[in-house]
Image 1 (tube, one colour):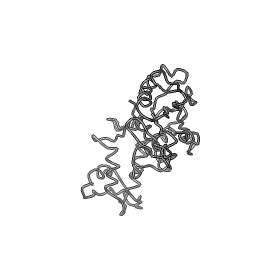
Image 2: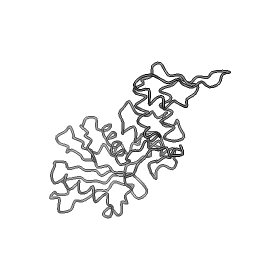
Image 3: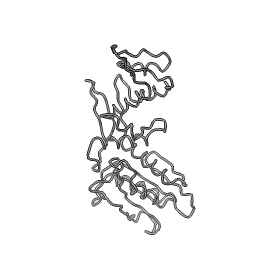
Image 4: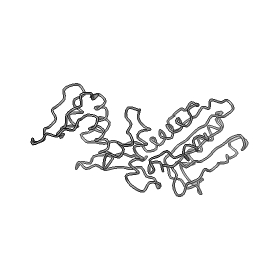
Length: 272
């Protein structure tokens, strides 16, 4: 299991855990990738805007800046020393007071939702330090799910623990199963990839025990995996080759570097 995010060490310094992608050459681009994954992982009220993703030198600072912009109006007290924020009274005050105890030159916004601010703070704070770590595989699953919904507006898209089902609105088109997993695979040695072996067991069960006939295994695109690969089923699946469609598909994160939607990814998911 691979975790991405950040944690504050005993010495107070922040350590980042950025997602790995050969398509992204800088920590900045990998940080943008993290926030795209994060946005797919949370509800609409907890998402980052594209502008906010850039406002910080690391993941923690981006989180902190978002919370501070939500809470405070910056103020400058000309000719006077910095003024510390006073404690806030109320049931959600503890999280906010701990977050702002070193704050200076700031005034609480009159319109701020204290409950929402406390929710953000509690998400990145625990055990006396700041920390947010999430399973990269699970975040990738949610990202593929959100993008599948975006390009399958007329279909019903269902998210399960390890997979996604697209129920086609047309009875003439079979339903589709997506199995995303954040593992770097070698397209020339698929039979030796443990993750492929594991996911193919799901493919066998699906073809043998359901009516789903389109299945896509989705993994990150990299130098050793750049193209769609059709997979022929062994004899244990009693279907003719023309009766099913199983593919291994590379998923590109180039949009994190270009800051625009990658049409190749969208077109790939439209095939589903």
